[in-house]
Length: 119
Image 1 (tube, rainbow, N blue to C red):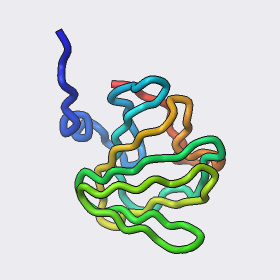
Image 2 (cartoon, rainbow, N blue to C red; image 1 turned 90 degrees about the vertical axis):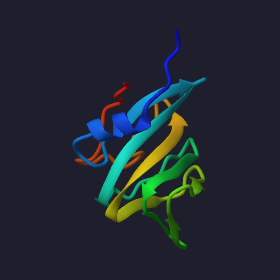
Image 3 (cartoon, helix red, strand yellow; image 1 turned 120 degrees about the vertical axis):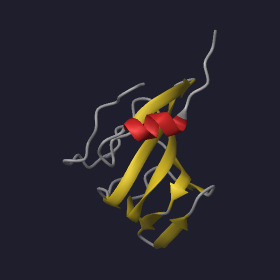
Image 4 (tube, rainbow, N blue to C red; image 1 turned 120 degrees about the horizontal axis):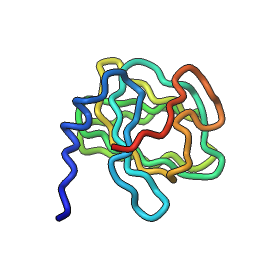
């Protein structure tokens, strides 16, 4: 019997910020959740767009031509190849949608590069 995915429970299990968890797979795309806090690595994804949907808290996406501020229930799509840097002063819980093979730090590996972890 199918079971619903409890996003709050998955998010509560994440001990460190910027360590996404894959909660579902849709065709060749991962639906991921992540807790954020502070600055993330500036990076881009040359081959894919990236969807950010803020579930709680606030998230700023720094782009070359300005910033996008997101609050709960707000969504932004970073176009493929666009350098961006997520930032959250107080922390946020975010849902991401991107191809399953996408590395969280894109073309800029760093200490925050995370392995794909499905729950």
